Image (cartoon, rainbow, N blue to C red; front, side, top):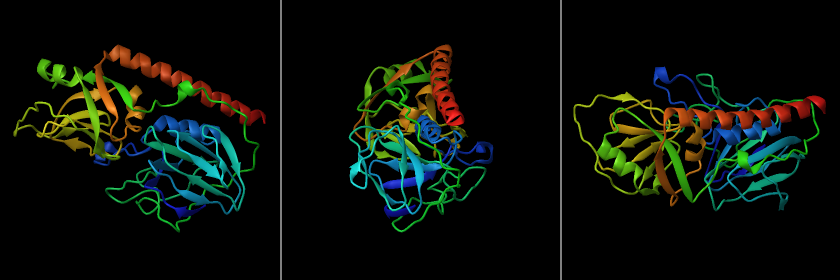
Length: 312
């Protein structure tokens, strides 16, 4: 696959790393549900490496036949200038060009290729860490002229599968994010953070999404640095909350009174500047129940597609 146009920021991402204890960010696809479903559609393992497209997509010229799936936000896409469907497994022939444009809602999509993309592996993952500069393709976003390869597998017939829209990660412009309280959630902070809406600012990337509105922020110069996790709601001294995403550092000194429930982490990856966000406190039981339901529905879809490829 040759990159004719790189798009705004297109990177190789997989399910991420599990070495945060070493001080290495987890990384991985910002919308992990889109990654899993795109991989399932082309019969890849759930965490196989794929391309993550952000806001404006690339133009990719294929030099070999491939089976691909594009899942996530509703990006406009064409294959040799003909409409290209999302959420489907689509065969691409050598010599064809896939052009992915922009999207009016959401921020990211995943392009999976049957066989899984190859690339630099670091700490057990091919995910691109843009800050440190490792993983994926030389630790950077795609450039025009780059070439990407994938593992060769026997050809298969694309399934005529239809994935329920309910499996898709919701996209903007309005988001209600379920949050859990941490020991730093004082009554005043909780009332301030959950009793209003916020706007996603332009300072948004794979590390975090900064919100525009200011809230009173506690300031403790003696506060020690504590571990961070994706989804943590940080309060820096300027009072503009930051929602941490997969590339966030592993430690930080800001207060973190809330953390977004795991079930809503994919939604964080679809935030774009201008979206409105509400934080809604939930119990641990409610968060776990919602995650179990989501996981059951996604696994059923993965199993159905696996069965289809086995029987084909």
